Amino acid sequence: MFVAAVVSLGYQEEDLFSLMLAGGVTLFIGLAMFFLSGRPTERMEVSHRSAFAIVTFGWFAACIVGALPYFFYAQVPSIWFNGAIHDVEEGGLNVQKADCRLDKGIGREFCSFTNAVFESTSGFTTTGATILEAGLWQRPDSRAGGLPHGILFWRAVTHFLGGMGIIVFGVALLPLLGVGGMQLFKAEVPGPVKDKMAPRVAETARLLWKVYAGLTFVQFVLLLLTGQGPYLAICHAFATMATGGFSPLASSIETLQSPASEWIIAVFMLLAGANFSLHFNSIRRKRFVHLKDAEFRFYLIVFAVVAIGVALILFFDKREGVHGALRAGVFQSLSILTTTGFSSANFDLWSVGAKMLLLVTFFVGGCAGSTGGGIKCVRVFLMTRLAITELKQLVHPHGVIQTKLAKGVVPVSVVISVAGFIALYLGVFLLSVVVFALFGYDLITSTTVVGATLGNIGPGLGDVGPAANYNFFSAGLKWHQIFLMVIGRLEIYSVLIVLTPEFWRK
Image 1 (cartoon, rainbow, N blue to C red):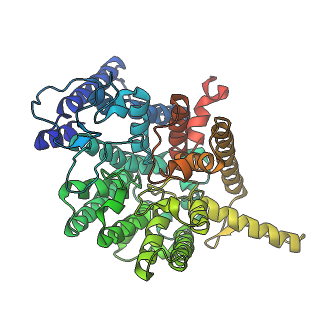
Image 2 (cartoon, one colour):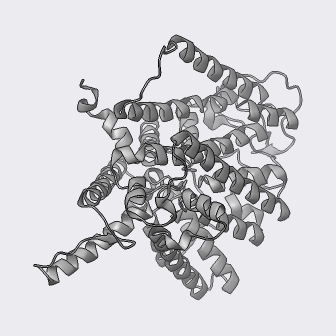
Image 3 (cartoon, helix red, strand yellow):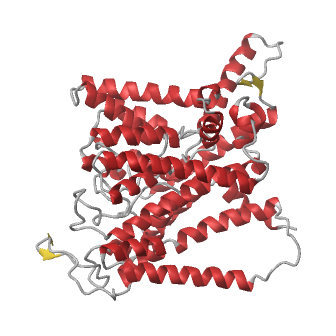
């Protein structure tokens, strides 16, 4: 928050006080918890049960505290700022900072604490869904009519922190859950992922941070070369590598009208959706090891099929030429598959066939060990292999046919845990769709709003398409979406296990 305040100070804008106040409150809370908890006299071991509680409550706490800059910006009068905010007009009136009593002005959506928490949660979980009806920039060269640089930079920073946070979470905690995530890689997949990156979790986290930060910096430099200014370049790099999708621009990447930027972002979305341990091992061994990994190959196949299918549909619908159709197909397929949620076009206006192909990727997601959300490719791939095994077993009922993955036999316990995870994921999905339908939303909107929040994608179809926002939902449904974003990001089990009575029994 203080870094975002420095950005605000550099641009001399009206959000400086809200960022400083939010940072101060957060620092006070953190220090109070630190000193009140006492210092242990000896080394403490964290149990599995404690680890789940720490992660679950830690993420919810981060989302709530992360809402303070937005809420304070709308609710607290600015000080240290005497200049006019804008000289453009909105509805015939000079644009001003939010006035919560009159429900107008820049950032008026954040007058509601629920909205502020929604935006914060969407950032930390790298979902990219927004409640902003106005406030995002209409042009890449001016914030005219939009929120200040500091607030939107904080919005991008929440992506950057949440993206790496989920990778460390995946490496450190998911193996304890036994839900077929990282432990499937470590136990079954030969090649680069089977090798330990480091003997300790802390060292592994540091190595992952270096890879993550390094790729972000490379993308930042490349985006600068396309003509984006430093501010937009860093915000888009943060959002890409975290597979988040928040952009300061109202029409996302489409506003740039830059094919070069789209191709660069597409490449880094592809990298962000892959297992980061593959990137580390490629750098360490100085050779490309990704194709040895079964999940990564499956990830490429899903991407290629959807991208080519969408491109062909756009081309034959005469919506785009060859290059335009290919670019749109590649970009939007990667954006939804990796759960980034950027848009280079309003795909809600595309034909049914193209939208159905994109809808399929809602339920796949990125690779395990990536910043992407969703079910994860490795689980979908394993269930595909299991279905093939079952077909073979029907043909040869007396044969001993085992489910294999990358030449290794997958233990029955892992297969059962993966099947259980997918069943629970789909159960939460279907139940939530029914909830939204009962509140009067059509099937397309109900289906994609749940898929977009539970899968951490962001934009959906219908009323939550890429040109729309989430502000029209009631406060109760927004809290339901907040819950979906967090449990989707933390692989469902981590949160739901804390809600069971058995968890709290000694």
